[in-house]
Image (cartoon, rainbow, N blue to C red; front, side, top):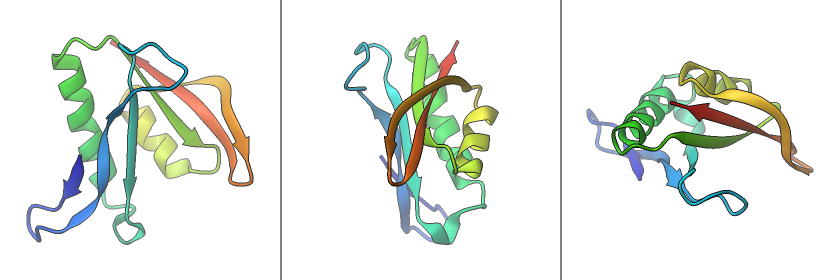
Length: 105
């Protein structure tokens, strides 16, 4: 889903749930990405919290999220929402390590 600022009406990124290619279909992955211009403003936390609340209301018991090891801000967002790091590396690339996190109701 597009993340849009109410006061301005511009689209600043996306946030939603997607199926994990290697996971059960009833355990979706939270995915979000926002424009650099709005980093540090709380929009990622607000958008992700809304998606997590919807998933809770829909009865989703477990959510996953991948996060780059160097992305401290995104790791903080996930921690605020109740995700915990599993210690599992989802993938390695020239961009770093993609860490797997999980949130269970």
